[in-house]
Length: 85
Image 1 (cartoon, helix red, strand yellow):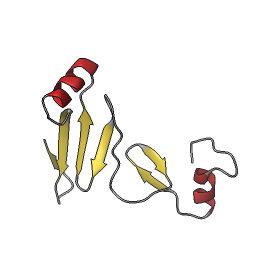
Image 2 (spheres, helix red, strand yellow):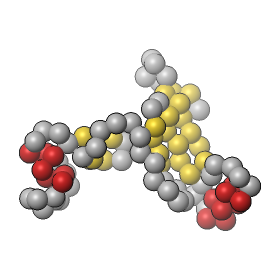
Image 3 (cartoon, helix red, strand yellow):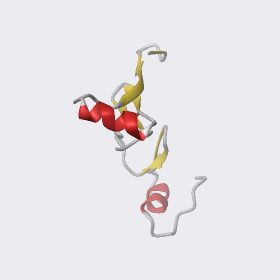
Image 4 (cartoon, one colour):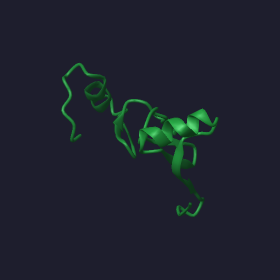
């Protein structure tokens, strides 16, 4: 593992127990495909799709004010391991 973690930290414990997970963001103690941070810029993952929220705060809030999801770009993964935009 290329992260520093104290001996009792959940990442260190998961590594010892061989349950440590890795996703596109890095290491995690939780499996499963859903990862949805909030706010400007973050990348999210759910099932077979990745997306990124708007990067600029005024655009992000403008989308929310219009009742729209503030997504800047997204990628749908296909079964042949490629992806479509």
